Image 1 (cartoon, rainbow, N blue to C red):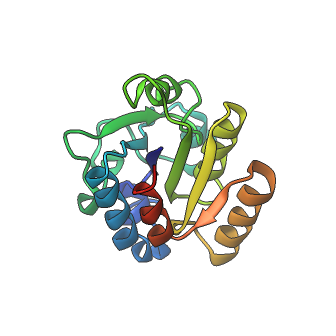
Image 2: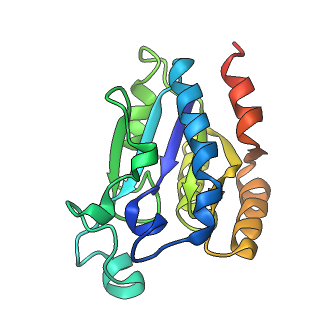
Image 3: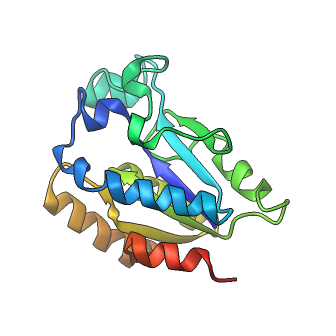
Length: 184
């Protein structure tokens, strides 16, 4: 198992594409990440690090999370620890043309991760596309219901239903996930 924290970046929490609803999930993600570290569960940050010519920037959302800017940094409340992993992405999916898959397969002394726990932003976009690519690569998927968020409640709820129905994701609370960390 590994926890994948998606796009908990300044531009999405307090910046250019602020999601006001994100504040409810920050304490939950803090607990999830801390519990993962305490239980030897790897924590991976999957972060937008765009170039100005990327499709998401040039054609859809405008400048956001531009590589090397403060907007592309993880929020201070969830700052990666030295033992965590950071994988930059340039599209919605954490897997598309990144090293995430090979990283996950190399963890746990080379035995690899079997299940990814997804948290962060946005339930119906980056979480969804990362879940799709995880599903197609054979990973089990757990989504932290109270650790993901979207622009609107409707986007969030529809995103969760889609993840469950299409990618067989288990929708669990952070507290339920933390209990799973202690199981063999």
